[in-house]
Length: 173
Image 1: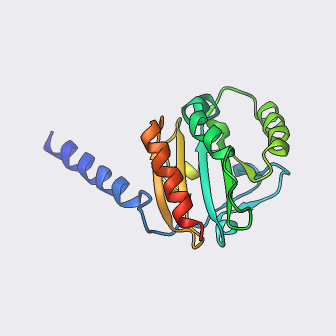
Image 2: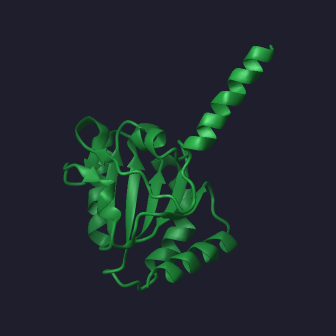
Image 3: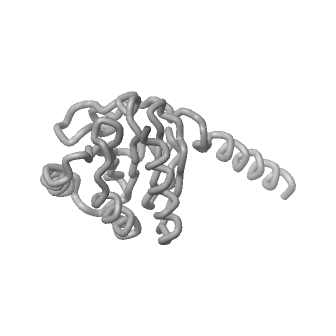
């Protein structure tokens, strides 16, 4: 019994140590081929986030309603496109919907959202590499140096949305 407790404690500690921490740079990863990519079917690299403030949404399509009030408010902002954009990374492995149908729907949606790039994670790669929560709506804000300045998983309250909007505004220089 004691051995099980020790093993579980070590595993929990490793998980905590590997989680994204505020002020740390977002690990540079590449989604390509079987792991995913952008809506044009090309490789996507996290290093493309450097140089602007980004809201990075890592979402299970089945949990998208959790982020809708935030997205509605975000889409009504007139942020400078040279200094800010949104990247929506869709966790395709977390949904029952067929990838091809979901990719087609989101590629069409991208035409409406001019300052949003859609990326597809087909294998939950970022759950492992960035340690974001699986089967959830994750919101990350990264500054122009790719440092994590905000992170949240799950439904956002009105006060949390206010906080996020303030963080975005303060980081857009």
